[in-house]
Image (cartoon, rainbow over all chains, first blue to last red; front, top):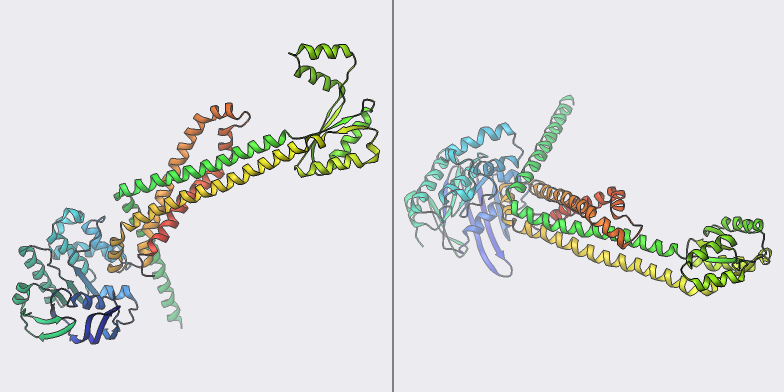
Length: 224
Length: 321
């Protein structure tokens, strides 16, 4: 489903973020990408989101060529994203934050009224709908962020250090949710440097070091 | 073929629906953000009120300057002194001739008797002069034609016309233009200077005010740059991001306009009687109300225009365009 072919990314003048990366991700896979800070995890995800363009090489999302980054809104609909710092809109309530993602693609009011409560239920925050982000805890914010990523029923979810700011209990909760999402058929790509999470998952792990893949194992463990 | 047409129509309807629903959401979202970011709104509005206030003041100042200049120029005229034995019918003939010249704004005839009455009125407290006049017995004053021209430069031509025209030579004693030329030129050059200085001054002040307001809006949007980034990430199109900010700018501008208008009305009511003492004959409130349409237009243009244009320009930096 996702294909990286000889991808290199160089930030001018000469910082090599990624060097000759090649891998495939199959549909419904749960892939973790691990590595130290600066190893290129975030750059990899940014390339997938069309926030950056590769210096050389090719990326495909199904048949879509991500070097061109045409029709961004359509791509955003197919790939949901979750960030370490949640990236919620502070002047909108939890409900409105999720609804916004639907509003931007022109979904009807009926669809929004139907889908948002559903996805809030999935993340277990129905009773937080009218709260603003600053009234929510870190874990709750991340769950709202996850709900927003899920609202379009995307084919893939990218999670960039989603547990980085959370306590152990909330961490487990978020990972449990990601697994649940994966179980219903969504590809999950998780970038993290949390050893416990990786070891408890027992899924495919791609290890990056200084912009290169040093390990790609089907049932990987956290080794750096 | 038919199916294609139906399909095309359906697509157009869908597009139209999308536009309509987006517009509705943009307006709603702009209004909500405006209400929720109260302090940002208040800061922007207060700066805008100051800007609108300044620009309206400049407009009124322009009116006052214009009034001052015209009243100054009104005072300028040349007098044609007519010979003591000139017949009134000839004088009136000359007056009609003069009025036919396009450069001439008005001609006023002051007869010998009127001139005497005016002279007496002017010197009524000065006994020496009145006694001297008594002693002469006869009316020593000459009848005059007071001519006002449209522009200072035209007095020269009018004077030349009077002096060179042979038919008037036995009618005219003298024209006082040569003596007053220096003063007339002076008055007109001063008023022209006031005009240009005022204009330059207004332009500079107006420019500064607009710049301040523009930068305030820019700062407001700068403080929201991360939100803009998030909106982009979620997949909002440029117009969907820009729209609410422009709506907010417009709302702030409209409120600022309203506040300035009310403020000015109160100020005018209060200041107008005082201005009457300072500038007799100039009714500030009357001028303000008389030009209310223009004033409101200026205020709306500054307020809403500034809000919308500043938002538009400021947000460009944070959009992927």
